[in-house]
Image 1 (cartoon, rainbow, N blue to C red):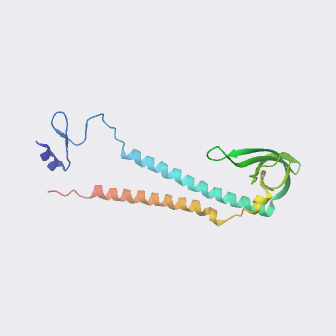
Image 2 (cartoon, rainbow, N blue to C red):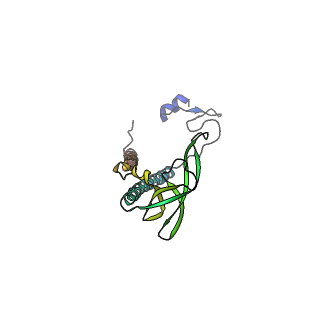
Amino acid sequence: MSSSDASARTGRIGVPDFAGTSSSARLRGADVPSVSQRWWKMLGAVVLALLAAGVIVSYVTVVNDNARLSRLHSHGLVVNVRVQSCLGNLGGSGSNSASYTCRGSYVVGSTHYVEVINGLSHLVATGSPVVGVVDPANTHDVILRSALRGEQSSRSRFLTPVLLTLGWATLVLATRRRRRGAGRRSKSPVPSS
């Protein structure tokens, strides 16, 4: 049987092996193990589950951040914070200073705290007083009062979670459509000639 007879019968162009017969499944070299379709389906399910978890976490993060900002604006405790230290943060290339992370001490009730001062991005001398606002639900969270004025809870913060949800839904629908299409193709009768 010639290779043209084999390709006419199978519909595939064959590659002759060393014995002179036609083989469309092997080329020279080592055998490549195939991965089962079940494994790919399991991997796809795991990826979709991880993406769903990421979407849920992003929604929870936005809700918590908006609630924290609302609490700080409406019920925040104004405190005097004494700067204890400031460390410079390097920029992306590592050659320039991008901002500063400053720690300060303050007292809420009778408890003394030493925490990072959120919103303080410029160098402040050690021992300098600054005015901060403490979250009443989490007294370890202090933000510079001037920085809090520029922060507002907003619906626009939900844009990223909504886009992630749309992307996830698109992947789920594409996966279902592909499964249905594969199921229909496997059930359709093979035309005989």
